[in-house]
Image 1 (cartoon, helix red, strand yellow):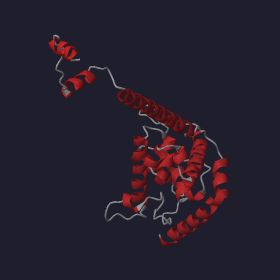
Image 2: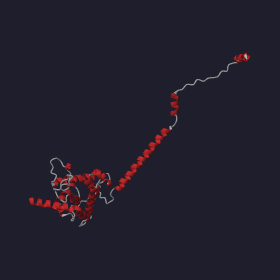
Image 3: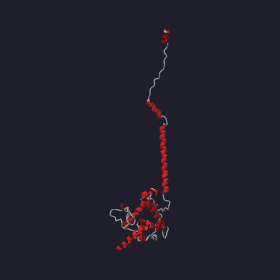
Image 4: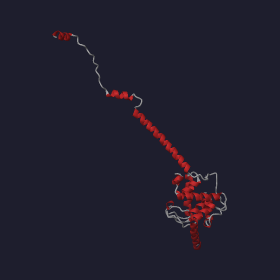
Amino acid sequence: MVNQQRAWLDEEPIVIAVREVSYDPLEDTAQSLKQPYSIWRRRRLLLAFLMLVLSIGCIFVGVQLISSALPTRTVYIVTENQSIINADGIAPFFSPEVQYWEEDILRWAEEYDLDPNLIATIMQIESCGDPMAGSPAGAQGLFQVMPFHFAQGEVMQDPDTNAKRGMLYLLEGLTYFEGNLPYAVAGYNGGHGTVARGYHMWADETRRYYYWAMGIYQDALTGQSTSDRLNEWLANGGSILCSQAAQTQRSLNTNS
């Protein structure tokens, strides 16, 4: 036993090579950066791409919906080289209360470079020729102009002043809509900004206004002696407005 132990002690020791290993976290980070993209980064890029595609699709669909909701009736475009002014007079089918103002309408048409039949159409459905007309919303006069359109000290019911502010607002609409007359007419009632948002955003009042005004004006443009659209307007409450206008005009004639 002693001899075996001595033999074991006399053996050459076995040398085991040991390699020193050190951990460097910066080296691991550098190695990870060499990878093209990690899984989470690829997922984020894919999600961003899908969101971009979805946004473009929503914009496209929105534009199509707005376009499809716009009126498809005849559009009259006013340009510098195309005059629609009829200086001979207004159409014979306008109510007597509007015919009362014919000379003034022709004068305003020349002053503001507008078709007198267009001016007569606006007057017809706004006040039927009543210079003292007022609305619950505060609109005043022949062309039912809102008070904030007037300068300080101006008399809102004065026919010339009222026509000036009304026609300037109508011209503003023609400029805003690049000569698109139906939109300018609708904007006269509903506001240019609201009308520009699309037909589906128009109030019912504005839609009716557009229907009456463009139908009456189209009859005037085509030289009709009568207007079914005007008669329809009269039957739907317009006659009440005209009765009030006739009473005001009789009062004006008595006082003059």
